[in-house]
Length: 404
Ligand code: AMP
Image 1 (cartoon, rainbow, N blue to C red):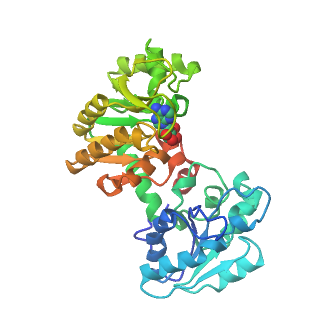
Image 2 (cartoon, rainbow, N blue to C red; image 1 turned 30 degrees about the vertical axis):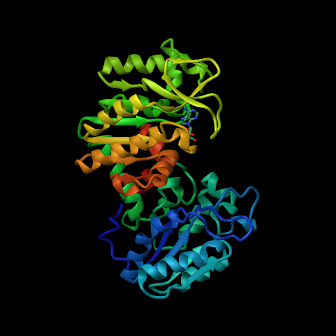
Image 3 (tube, protein in one colour; image 1 turned 90 degrees about the vertical axis):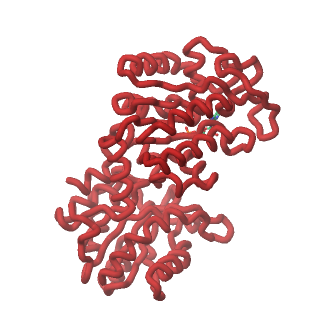
């Protein structure tokens, strides 16, 4: 693979797989949260400034059966144009091809001059994209002289545009974009160069979603903090009373096996000693505080309690490496967001003290953004599922294809 930052794109057409899968308003088709588009701008502008041309390809939504208006990437053209023009300090017109392959795309891509940008229509209007069809990938590959993958969010998928396409480019003509590069670099620090103590904070709803990541971290972390709904399966497995808290009864043995393995490996597992409990899963529920293993019947734990928040914060503040995946409670409701907020404060404090902190996985990312801590941690990953699979120890096809 080639190095993006040192590659000179002058005179080349760069075909970039980006992740422009942003929310689009159903009525007005206006772009909502544009973070994913913004994340790709540095890669695009570097190429344009070098004097290269850019061909952008992405998916949007989940079209079932071919083209459909609500999933057309034409809706983002104006927004993209504004962002790129601002970054380039000049008006950059975005051309659009109504089909990602075929004559129109071929002709428009062939006619591109240095400094120009072409956006292709939604890749997923073709079933071949998700199937990883090589013939479809080869057609796409003709639209660029170099291939750049900057879509970390889909790196765990072996789709035509994210992985299969790479085989049609020579080693020095395929590379990660700047976003992908920083995602991979940050994940590698945590997985392979973590300074100890290394604390992993794992939360969210279900143990079953997080078993693989916890197992992989048992060989790497010094401390694992377990919060959120999944903590109650552990509590019950240890003989606690958890009322009507979330629990996966078919995972009680798994929870015990994790605790046993942690003990064997000398990894300290931290469970919340107390919880904020509620009589109902609702924003206006009656609440109280209780030990997490003594939750009365009819009540459920919806957040870690104040003692747990303090205990977890102390562990976090003495850490040198921190990985955070999953909220500590139902942070979407104000009454149950204190725990997640306290963890964000502690991670920010540890980071200010020199720790490397990575927040990855959908809901903890949403939480740090919501609470305004995104700039107070070392890295916030854009790829939920991809980051999770990376930390489960899986090889991501989108990364492997570039490195091959
Ligand atoms: P995940 O996608 O597995 O990371 O789970 C995130 C979701 O878990 C969020 O929507 C939270 O509201 C939810 N969650 C966190 N803690 C609890 C809890 N104690 N009980 C029920 N749901 C929870």
